[in-house]
Image 1 (cartoon, rainbow, N blue to C red):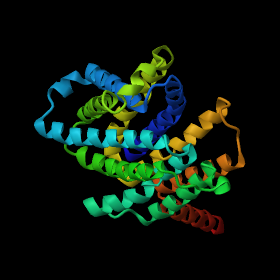
Image 2 (tube, one colour):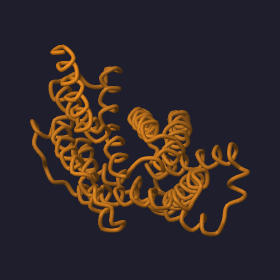
Image 3 (cartoon, rainbow, N blue to C red):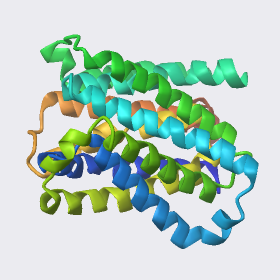
Image 4 (cartoon, one colour):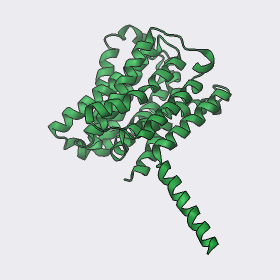
Length: 306
């Protein structure tokens, strides 16, 4: 797989994650706690991965089990921290703070793996963060510190570490096994959380209202998206992958506009445009493109003179 194709796949992953917000809201509207949603999503994903890739999963080595289990634990911490933080903060604050993982990501990669990011990445990060300020309406509505913001900051840090760890683990673990262990670990830890901390909330669940959205989340946003992510991230660099996956927030806003859940605003247009520009800067060698263009123009001009 080429890096360009891997980046396109990650863009599709971001799209699938972005469209999942509607189904999460539908499940929560049925009084299903985030821990139950996360547990069922993981269980569905693990079952599907095993159905399609059972030959590889059955051949899992002890090293793959250890490395994949760590990836699964990190994944659970991310989804549970974010879900819990959302109970104590606004959606805009959560989206913006979570997006700050693109700030932590290059430095975590640099510290733990000794791989300094290219200079253009810093420009992409700045543009991305400005875009998120507009996209989440914080630039117009202001930013208020809530109790859950601390949990969401931890979410951003752990998610940055998760993406960096994926790049390390993918060199030693087959992607099918990581995908299986991501789902399995999420199912085990989240359902344990459900039957302990969230036990008192379980009788309130409207299963008829919640089960269909959760199945869609398990099949699309967890099984399909996570499997495609771990396959593709092996063939691109960590920071670029993080920037591309950040477009999840943009897709979520666009889908909300299409379905009439929120209006098309100037903040959405400006923020979305900036995020697209930042992603393009990270993905393409702009200096090389400009250099080739200048050289081509000089050749054309020289031919005309001859």
